[in-house]
Image (tube, rainbow, N blue to C red):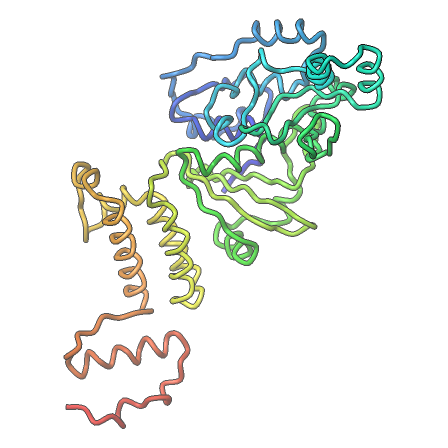
Length: 378
């Protein structure tokens, strides 16, 4: 199965592809020139208008007396208006972007600091173009003024609730934006699951994703290799985006996002049910994978599963508690079909009771712990 590593722009366009189709086959990036382009984006042209124009970007550059890095220019035009950029932290509007020296100078002038002292202070600190901020102003993120000529420069963040102390947080803009998208997912409408380090090896195996190939990170623009601790992989047949986070050269966390499925208020239960299924099936990856697919688009499962056959009106009428109860039922049925649990009435036939011993054998419990022939049963 063909897969592609993604930039921040690719990621966000895939997330919103049900609403927009802001890509053309004349784009230079290899993803949009690939044979899967038509399959992934189709002919959707319902909302192709760009909210942030090149003219606005040009006017901003004239105001700032500098050019924005190419990656940031494109991101503003192509994806800067989407709400994923403004859930917990926010990309600044073009008229809000400014240099840290200008912001600090204005603050010092408001404090009636002498001009010569202001200039002396500013000479001692680096100047950053600020383009992203935490929603309550806890931190600001920017690019060093001398790095603005780079295509995809490093990003720095304030560390002490002021504009004096800065620390590099990513080696490029792409990585920084992806990290903000991940932080903003919780407050967005996108369905997603997270996997911890212990589960990732199983996940890679299940999805037939090569760890070595993933780490090669082949995505390029004009021979530019992206090097950062975030790796994105799009499985177009499953319509799933995998985002792997690295720490100390090890996979620390993986996010699975379904662009076509909306998160609802019961999505938090999915992770819990997957963990329960993992425990009860003794980590049977086939079972866990089936449950993952069921939960990713549970409304569709309720429509099509022979045990439910719910219509849209019935689904819409379900309370959150009822949805979670149905998810539990779906998990139980799956575990039962796979031979890991069985239902017994408190007064059952002896041959039905023998099913318990079949389950015990399947999960590796020695049947001699309790031999059925030794029990006094009628």
